[in-house]
Length: 152
Image 1: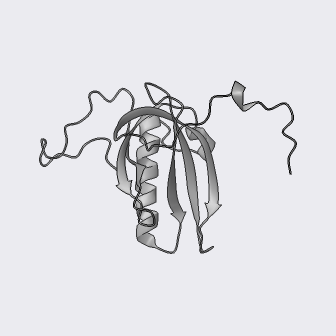
Image 2: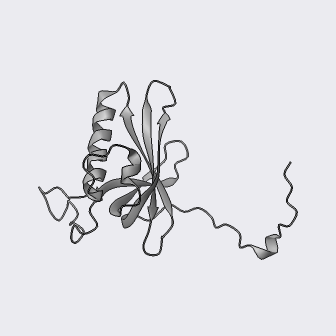
């Protein structure tokens, strides 16, 4: 049990129903990072917490997991490329600690995907780019044969 004396729900707005972030580009910063063990215990992933810092969705959080230590070489390769994109986007090419990436603005490209277990939509970071990298690139359907700079 916990003592709740002094709390009055009449004085506090209730939390709103959770909705995923709409797909789009957002200026964000990494506010937290932590190396965690995988569920199977045979590796580790770097969990990064991104906080949106501008616009209608300011202060919303989204998480990214990078499988930097994993028996699956493909998973590690993908994670290392994604970390490279993050480092280049914040201008820290040789970090000595994940904290070196904190509080530096970058643009994250967010998409939506369906969860396999619940079929609900969830937000997912699809790519990264520098804040001053110019206008958002055209979708692949409009710019055939070119890679968008925010893609992993």
